[in-house]
Length: 421
Image 1: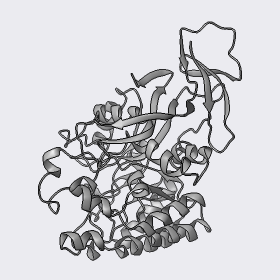
Image 2 (image 1 turned 90 degrees about the vertical axis):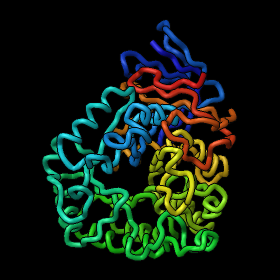
Image 3 (image 1 turned 30 degrees about the vertical axis):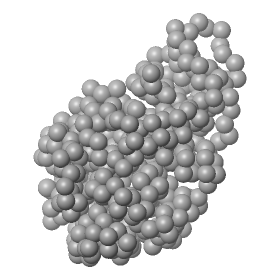
């Protein structure tokens, strides 16, 4: 039996309390202000630490199959565990694309060899080409958690409407990369101060807002569960806010980097802060924070996007977009939102646990007796120097930064899958 003692237990949307958690055979067998009388095989003293349900990230790229020089499912799962995540949802832009049951089964079966829970989305369109729908029924039957062409916007309105109708009938979500590529000249860099710095046009905010507006209208008509991925603009936040007044099936996620950084970062860090959609302005960042406060934005998702060092080196215009995110996600959000007194801890816990799981229809459990023993333990007052990653890649503007707060343990299925030694 594993006993966690003296922890501040923080469940989603409920008051924290100090107590003991006991685990046997992958299940929480005791939660209370005092331990049971049973002997423990191991004790974790979590005094001055917070115990939360294991985190869930609905937007990660593990680059497997096809791009395993950047990351693979094994190393990606290690990053997830280090960041406190016990569930992740993989995107479909692999090689071959996860648009068929064979590739999906490969991904899910390899995910089962990791110590965490690996789920996967399948592609909306064959080859991510935006012209022909995949066999969504067969992919759902094979285990697809949802559908996405993430990385590539779906431009064909009629095709998107049909995809939404099929997904609604299957009761699975569709996650959308909302950037109208017709309005973008150079992606990954905001049209504004950052683009002026590099002497280019860049990616304007209208590219995001216009597609969000179009797709919300279609989603409301079809009743689909829709996720606006990595929202970055104040206009996008307002569109989602109004949509959620009509349907809570319209959701939005924000990355830790869009929450914490602005376009100034891409000027300072170059390609290691280049991403799609790009980092925007301080006004946009504040709008995102307001969207979190009022519930418009319900999930924090990393868009963990590893790239090899040589791919990020050199000309920023040629470098691919995307950065690492899993290892620093919670600590960034905790500092930006809880330590800064923007929201209370239970609301943040909901954004990492309950909300993403409910969106995908995964079981969502508090730390309580009878629940699966998926638990993350965080030390809020301990310093965390992010000086290296367990990823195959190193593309993060946060490398070298010291944060307040550190993930100490990640427990999945009752087993300690990460421990800060």
